[in-house]
Image (tube, rainbow, N blue to C red; front, side):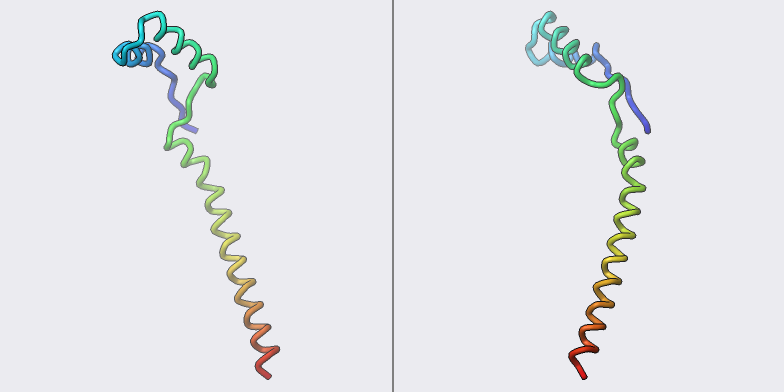
Length: 81
């Protein structure tokens, strides 16, 4: 999975630009870095991880459709004699 490292300096700079003092910005950046894993997932990485699950769900959806079609055919044949 693709990942991106958390840029604490950029985070601090954005907080300062938003009105945080340097001390507040550093503390918030450190708290955020401590609370999150070392690397953050990217959208592309998550798409790669989800792709096999989506394929499995598509297969299950097709199987359910086939079973329902067969059941409808069986019930139709039973009651249309």
